[in-house]
Image (cartoon, rainbow, N blue to C red; front, side):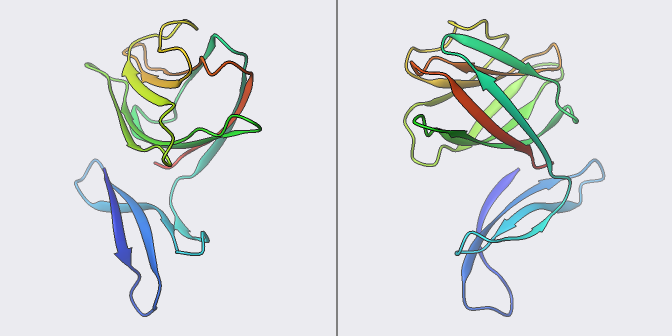
Amino acid sequence: MDLINDTIAGSDFTGFKVRYHNAGGAEVTALEINAAGELLASVGLRPWKASISDDTAVSLSPVRTEGIIAMTCLGAVTQNAIVAYDVVGTPQCVLMSSGGSPNVAVTTGVLMGTTGADGKLTISAANDGKIYVENRTGAAVAVLGTYLS
């Protein structure tokens, strides 16, 4: 999965693309956003929302065993993340972007609510087929997310 800074053909603005390779090896653009923040193209977007109290975790059952999730917190806690994950075999969870927030972490394994570092929002892929989001920010958060692929 690649985060690609790109100039969109036929235009004078710069945007970014999130791409992945499908099962056949073909490159697919999952998300394309221009410099003004407008969504230009998408494939397979699936939104979700979770309310998470401090020192608790929620589990998500992803629609694919591997992919990309974009998420943001609403309210006073403003962590953002784009995360690549794989929940099969040896799980993987890679932070592609944190929106500049130092309070986002990634790991692997089941999160129980106080597993990750205090003060952080932790995202984890586990070999039970789930993605976990743990809130240790000190306040309840509402997390909006989208499966990009």
